[in-house]
Image 1 (tube, one colour):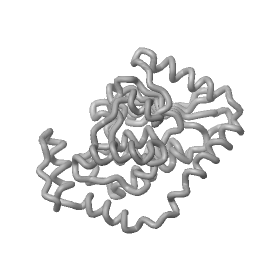
Image 2 (spheres, one colour):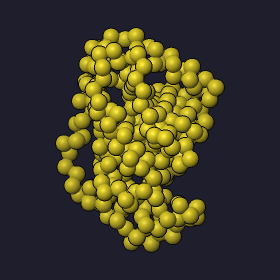
Image 3 (cartoon, rainbow, N blue to C red):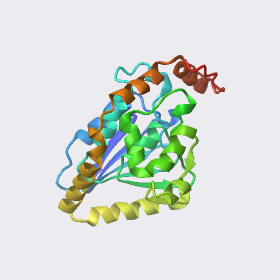
Length: 251
């Protein structure tokens, strides 16, 4: 069974995260499959792509057990998210359950997020001794602004979809029973719009958000790497897997 399923039907490219027993946590194979799904140019009939997930969780982020085996580390998910963000057509995330860490970033790198009110969004990296890269933090700053970004990152506690909607971080938040109806309305609206307009607008939005890429940040990258290589990071990930509180030493 594929952990990422891709289907093109009429105007819509559907991408399904299909690893429900692991809360759709992303391993190297899933990241590669997601990247491939969005690197493939859309056919003339396509108007948008949709990301959904199977099971109660949308995505729990990078698989902590597999993370150490990923030769690219954080760069692997960055490549995937960069590919999704730069896909030439609109991308809709239909979020039925929790989107945490890399799952949160996956949703926010889509153009429109339609979420169930029972979903939670968050970046719990500070709670396990890690830190988001410049690229991942930049996305939060773009969609959430500095105040919400500080709360999301520094506290590490998830925010309910309703609060994310109030803050303007996600486009729609509806009761679980209404999720597919709302998603269909958004998808149908996009599919009915002029394709050349959609492509032009998507390109303009992505290009205008790239201004932070030119800011020097090698020193920031080093701080992030220090955190990811630290004893605290090893302890944090082990504690999370063992479902206990970590004992951080600042080392």
